[in-house]
Length: 154
Image (cartoon, rainbow, N blue to C red; front, side, top):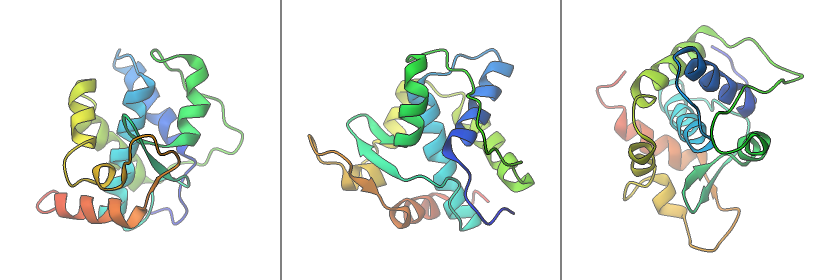
């Protein structure tokens, strides 16, 4: 198991590549939601962060700003993986987790994904404040939420 978190853009690339392989279109919103779920489950199941970037509470849900600003110039839909200078090979546990996230959440509609991230009492719901920018959703809050969800999942 990797001890150091991954570049969030590299993890986003994995989801984009899986979607392309399966003939699905990837939107910026979808990749952000999948990455948020993967980060949360990694914190809960492996007791370590998946990504080395923070998650913020934006109007439409949890956002990893690094991923948003890196991929947004491609448009809203039809994202392609981006070339990264310092890409590391993903460990087996991480690769398996990302495939599980794609299988579990990748089949949901954008609306369903959004509803899951906006659930009452969830990390985003606890910290989001309308018209306030740069509110970080702390990893301990994300961990606590996904640990509660993990009962019987592992």
